[in-house]
Amino acid sequence: MFDSKMLTSFAIKSSLSKYSNMKIGGNATYLLAPQSVSDLSSIVKEAKTQNLEIVPVGGGSNILFGNVGNRVIILDAYLPKIFQVDKKVVTVSSNIKISSFIDKTMQHGLGGLEFISGIPAHIGGAIHMNAGAFEKCIFDYLLWVEYVNLKGEIIKIDYNDLEFGYRTTSLQDFIVRAAFKLDKKTKKQISADREDIISKRFKRHPYDYPSLGSTFKNPVGMFAGQLIEECGLKGLQIGDAQISEKHANFIINRGNASFSDVTKLIQIVQETVTKQKGIELELEIKVIN
Image (cartoon, rainbow, N blue to C red; front, side, top):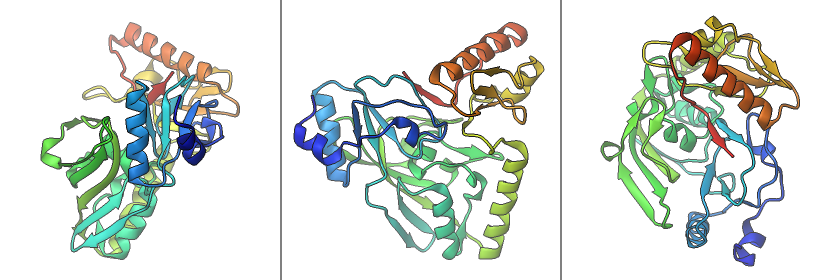
C-alpha cells in the first residue's frame, strides 16, 4: 500500500474515462496527481519499492484503459507549466498541450511543428510516441529531454542519445521537460500552415466521436486504414465501438463503448488483415489491461 500521506496529498477520486480521449476506463486503485517534480520523484520511488508498474498519463490521447489493477497511474495536470524562449530554442514542460504550445511559439515568431496541429496530446506524449505527420516527426526539432527514471532520478538526455523510429522512442519514463529548436516564421505563415493541417485532418479523420486517433501503425509503404477498408471492415460495429466509416484506422466510441467492445474490434481487424493480406498490423495506441 502507498503511504497514507501520499494518497491523501495526490490521490484523485475519479474514473479513468475522464482522462482518456476514448472516454473509456474504470476506477484505479492508484490515480495520482503530483504537484511538483519532487512529488513525482517520490511517487516513482515508492512505486518501485512496492514493485508496482507506473503508467504516465498526459493528454490521454492514445491510451485505452481496461482493468489497470494496482498500476500507478500518474497524471501530469498539476505539475508546474513551463514555457521559456531563448532565440530559437523553446524549453517547455511536458504537460502543455500541443495546441497551446503552437499558439505560444507563434507569438514569438517561431514555428515548425505545425504538422502536429490537431493532435489532442500533451508535448510529453507526443515525444514518447515520436508524433508526426506529412513526412515529418517531432524528433526533427528536439534538442533534449528531461525525465524522471524508474529510480526516481531526474535525468537530462541529449537528442543524439535517444533511439527513435516510426511512432516509437526508447523513452519509457516520465518526461517532465524538453527543448526544441524551431524555425523563424511569421505569425501569418504559422497560422496559415496550422489551419491547413487542421483542415486536412478534419476532412480525413472522424472528430465527431471520441477516439484515440490512428489505432494501428502504417506498415512500411502501406496505409493501415486502406488495408482495413479493403478487407471490408469499414463501419463494423461491436456494441458502441465502431471502425469509422470516414477513416478505417480509427475506432470511435458512439456512446457507451466498453473496453471489451474496442479490443474485440482490434482482434477482428488484426486477424482479418493477417488472413487476407498476410500483414500483421501493429498497434499505435497503448492498451492497459
